Image (tube, rainbow, N blue to C red; front, side, top):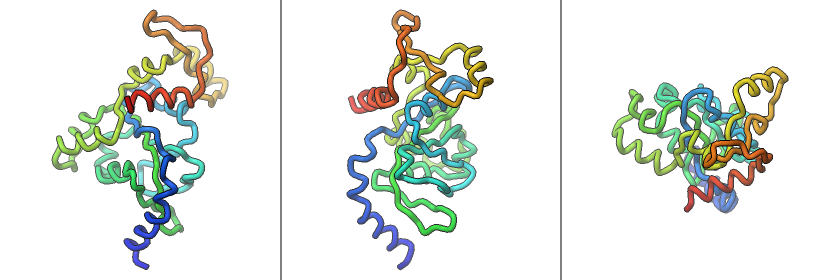
Length: 212
């Protein structure tokens, strides 16, 4: 069976399996370095797969384990290398084919999480290989829920703990991103003193905001 026919067969086999499994929006989170983009997504979407942006392979990816796929520190140079079609394809609701070394092509579907120092407009404006600039921007904005990191923190009522405390946690070997955040009242500009909530709670807040 040729490659194209294999993909068609997999689409028919997996179409029902995808239904209702991926309800979180694709998220594009941008902001300055050190503002908590990656740690916030690590806390909320713990079972994620970190895609190696140096190539197109999906080694060690397992759709039964990894609920989300993170593209960390996506920038214009990376996008030029991977191609805009790669980003569009992995957001496809019908699924997409993945290449894993020493394995036959597999079809999967994933919720994509992007962190970047650039917003979508800046990302595309700085790409050398992208044609139809405005159309490409619009296409990505249709696919992603784009938020600046401080906007998302405010939406969720979360704030990074002070830098000194973060450094002390890092020094002690902390690997729990939840410890980097505190519950925060942005209206009164002060900590609430309450424990932060569960990742599922924040995931639902993001979904509710996206679908409202």
